[in-house]
Length: 162
Image (tube, rainbow, N blue to C red; front, side, top):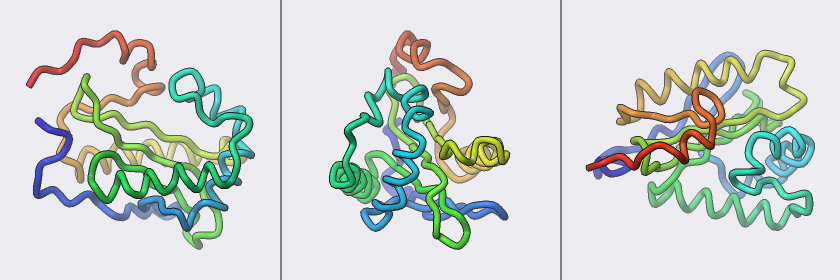
């Protein structure tokens, strides 16, 4: 199966009593940059070895370019980055990435900002994302690197046939 069926329209919104998940855009750059840079060490531990992100020297302009790229990827349905927003849209609380994989139908990764780690948000986000991906996306085999399986283990999996 290709990453997405031709006629599939990716979900645009997931809302809970705690947060709103929606496609990230360039208009989120200031809020995203704040969330990323105030959580940089935390995020580097999660993604640094794999993605080289976020670099210590990341600028707001570079973050804006990243968000523009993520926005375009969503428009052409090649990959998806969702902003985890407070319900009033004043704070970006984290991000969710839904990406193609040569090891499964998709790989899903997510993070919450460091100052939300003790609030239970990460657990609520994980439960919501798993349910949402299972019910709203056309995937049968989804990997959650850094959660159910290490990034290294994902790399060692055989490529999915077909």
